[in-house]
Length: 287
Image (cartoon, rainbow, N blue to C red; front, side, top):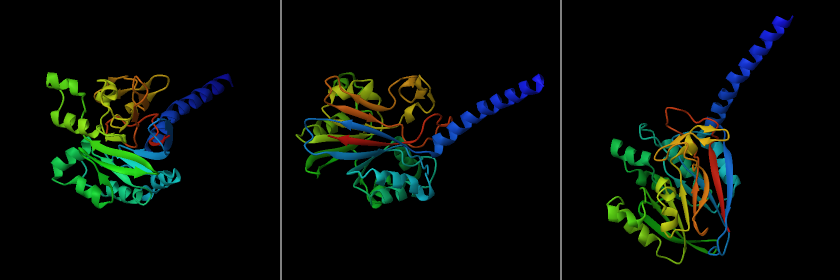
């Protein structure tokens, strides 16, 4: 009897050890979560609700991304920001990306910046992704900005694909002069500035969040570290390396007046799948 009890317990423990990772892998691919933040600024005179999506990577949540679209609609956003990598550079299919953009445009104005997969796709297939996304209804911003008004609030919304090193790196020839020229022009306004840029590393590691005079930056690319370990956080991220720590959430400048919003995103193309890493929709209330 004791021997039978022992083997039953070993079998039960074994099933748990096998089942928990499987459940986490499944949820990290097909579930959807919300991350909600409030950003307060004396420069905001009227509340604005923003939904950020990033790194879809041709993933689907429900038929034709119906679950994703429905959850975004439930948030009642004033603006929807997409910070790159809607598609995969190695897959010719663009319909998942464009169909989701078309559906999102029925909810609120959609602004898009490009990610590395859009840039690589254009090079591989000689396709104008900017034109495709614009045909789907979005405003695509690549070293461009628009001045607009939302709920009575004056905004400048811009987008750029690049590392965005601070201008002081021009002295060492590390910064891109064209990027610096765009960002210098972009920040030269009395409007509240919102920037979409796929890659976050220079904003966090090279002090961009302090040195550029931009109120709120939205970024993605790092997938929250792909594998998120309990009590430790993200395992690895491009440009950041192993166990970098800063891979999701809101990060403020030293004086607290400017912010970077960094999303874990929705999908992945990595060999190692997302683990303990629920795809997220980010909701930011500017107040």
